[in-house]
Length: 371
Ligand code: C2O
Image (cartoon, rainbow, N blue to C red; front, top):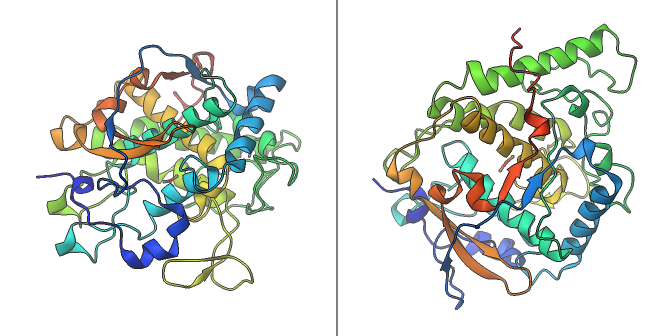
């Protein structure tokens, strides 16, 4: 049994042309001449990830400045924002395939046990690049703290205007000031104003959200498979399945924030089949990485894994196929070079030099909350 990621083919020449300027990191050894180095664990924890809604002025400005600088990098730099976004597109939007015999099957980092560790790696390199761009290696990627009542709305820091580097115009305008619905996929009830009077509807919406997180993190998360997703190896690629970490608040918020999909609009992006997709950044995995909010959203998804593993007694997989699965990402804005990193390297965030604000985790409001 071998892990799928090690068994892919070279990028498909057709899709490669389509997103050629993006040259994402690839699961097969890059064709570039640059040698791939192995990841070495960081020696100290120097980055603390904090809740977006509690950042002080100075930190808010730092975050904006870092993203602005990343957006200003030329697309020839693999750590530029456009190329970072393209990595996510490549890994879920039909760009890669399994080994040549299974060429018709798309490779995807979603829907299986690849989800949590792959996204942890991805935002780790993103976070490091941001810190480097502002000359601050203690910069921790702020997280969208949607599991606590005060954070259950699209953070104000990401809104405002086109001048804000954290802004994205492809968000659903009807949802921006409403209580974010963490169960949006199953519950289409009328959105409730976040800043409105704290009336019964508001209280109910908050309470339902807490129950959703409780279900995702505790009731429905008893073992590695239920929380992290189904095992995925090359001999069982048809048996994929999401864990509660991926299928619940994570996916609901993608769809909640995104502008709505479909193919009947002017403008929009051309997908791999040549069809125009309406601009829908967070709501469509192929475009999600274009919204800066994606990375703060995923920082909280990552935090949910961290809490499950460090506070709720959750135990990850023991399978060597999982632990030894590896991917290649670019590191170092000034001298970009590919680094191979294994799942076992990222199980403990200490190895990656970051942790989460302890204050935010002190009393998890969803811990004892069940509908
Ligand atoms: Cu790669 Cu939130 O998805």
